[in-house]
Length: 85
Image (cartoon, rainbow, N blue to C red; front, top):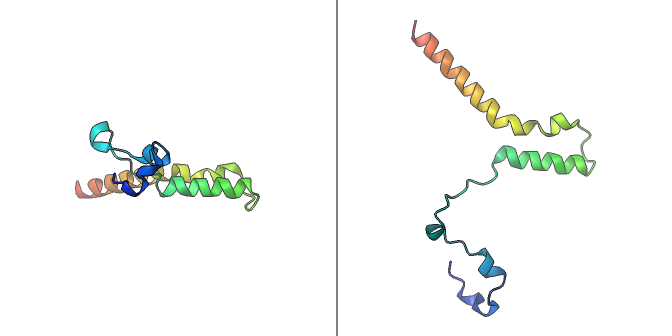
């Protein structure tokens, strides 16, 4: 990462932000995702008293990816069952 304008900062914050993925060998992460962000927003709103939902509703987006996977598998199973007749 090129940080020449910040060279005078020494080993400060900017040197901590440098990540060399080629030398570390770690795969890049995709980030938090839509359902994770939605869960964080709902938790923050619940803790601030903006929403008065029960906790199971607040945490419901955590099951979003699992729900989408099960829905996809059900549709694929239905397609293969109809196609196999």
